[in-house]
Length: 70
Image (cartoon, rainbow, N blue to C red; front, side, top):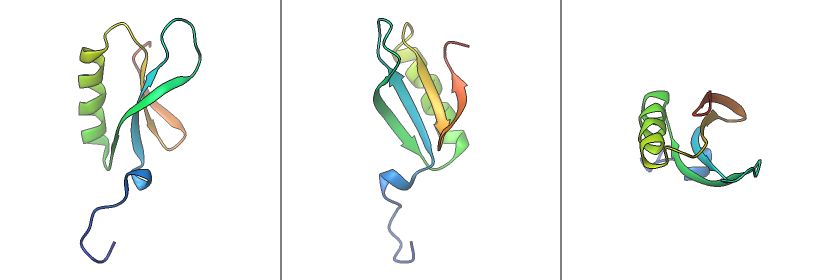
């Protein structure tokens, strides 16, 4: 953006997702979005610590970069 403001949240390419617990095969909520891979990985690791028994994924657009279950 040319006016010096940050990009809207929806335009950030990386997202950290928390999946439903108990066999649901769907994302419960997006925990965070990030503009770059380094920040996204740090958020992913923090989310794993906050939710150790849950599935957490890190995506860039539609591609899974990291999955806490693997």
